[in-house]
Image (cartoon, rainbow, N blue to C red):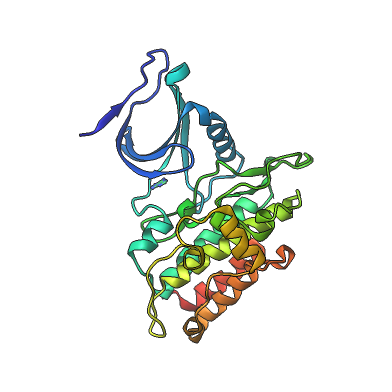
Length: 313
Ligand code: ADE
């Protein structure tokens, strides 16, 4: 029961994409597992009203030097159909394990696996955040993700991570001012206190620090599902699910994160494992209410690569 998905317009000479099943539903449309040219791919379909988001995401993938083992591999972007029937497709590599969130819901991880996921995910974000001047004269601008969360981290079959969903990303084109972009974007649960307060500075480092707050919550999610001899993993919960439940309002999250200054619970038993103890300190530094005190992605990467070297077998 494979759906054959072909352009109704014969003038658009596109390769047929056979949609198989919906893998995820996001802010904009759905992500399908699909087959194109005998290759399994992921196809994100944006409805016409979300064309801007498709354009924005395509622009990020097409930046110089975006190809990186820890950034989802872009395969193509196409418009299919016309006018009201138009749909916008974003084609990427497909990863059978799906998102880190899905994986943690149904699996616990060993400490080695936790380190591997954490390091590779941070490596992807550090690459995204970095401005790179290549020898060929091309420049990869710094990019803030602005919707970093465990649903937007995909796991490859070797349990290394890649970062996906650049629909809200912000590109810091050198020499160009930031202008009046919208500040309060992303997923409530992962919003940094300054975003919740509507008190962000519109400069590059402030945007990157907002991503680092979200990274801390994802690292915490990994820690909760890590099973070692010192501690048993507990059931999967979203960040702040214990504090505000599954469907918090913006006010619920503001009250919890900004006014009560709560953060997810770091368990004492985690600190009995020396590696986990180091990761706990990193998490706490990244969710600091003072955004300037947070670690950068490259600093977290440095720490995690040291941890990884100590523990990988
Ligand atoms: N969910 C969202 N994007 C995906 C992808 N590229 N592969 C697998 N699952 C996904």
